[in-house]
Length: 260
Image 1 (cartoon, rainbow, N blue to C red):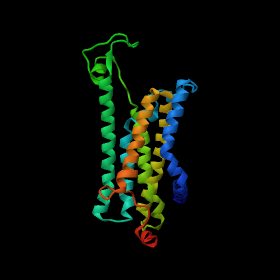
Image 2: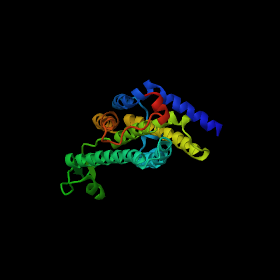
Image 3: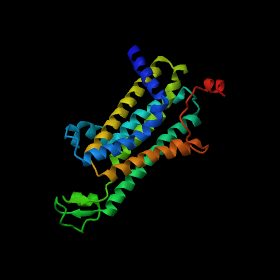
C-alpha cells in the first residue's frame, strides 16, 4: 500500500499549507458570486451537469449529508482514538457530528419554511393562474401544480458546509505519522482520508455546477452564506470555548507537551 501512503502524504502536505486552509472557506463565496454572474450573462454552455438528473447529483448530492456522515464517523473514531481512548474525549468528538447534523437540519427546515411562507401555487408553467387551495410546496406539487417561492439554495448550503466540516474534522491526519496505529487501522484511516478528500472534490465541483446552472443569484449566495456561517460560528467561535465539543486535536499528546 505504498502508493496509498504517498497519496495520503501529498494530501496532508496540501492541507498543511496555511493559505489553502485559510482561503478554502471563502472560495465558496467567490465561486457563488462568479458562477451566478456567468449564469446571468449566459456565458456557460449547457452540459451533462446542467441537468439535475446527472449521476453525481442523483447518487451523491441528493444524499450528501449521508455520504459525509458515512465516511466521517469511522474516520473520526479511528483517527482520534490514536490521541486518546478516553470515552469523554471520543464522546466530545462524536458530539461535533451531532452539532453539525443539527445545523444541517435546522437550516434545511428553515429553507423549506421560508419557501412555503413566501410562495404560491400556480396551475400553469408560465405562473399566471394561482391556486389558493394549496399553501405548501409539498401539497401543491402532489396535486401536479407548480410552486414558486423564495427558494434558498439547499445545494449551495449543504455542499459548502459539508466540505468545510470535512476539512476541519480531517485535520488530525497531519499528526498521525507519530501515532501508534497498527497496520489494519492505519490502512483504514488512510482509505477513509482519501475517500473524504474525493468526496470533498465532488462537493466543490457540484457546488460550482449549482452556481453556474441553477437558482437565482440571491438564492445561491444566501445558501452559501449559511454554509460558511454554520462552519464559522462553530469552528471559529463556539468550539474555542470550554463548554463545546472543542476543536479536533492537531498534535499527538507527546508533541503537545514538547511544544508547551
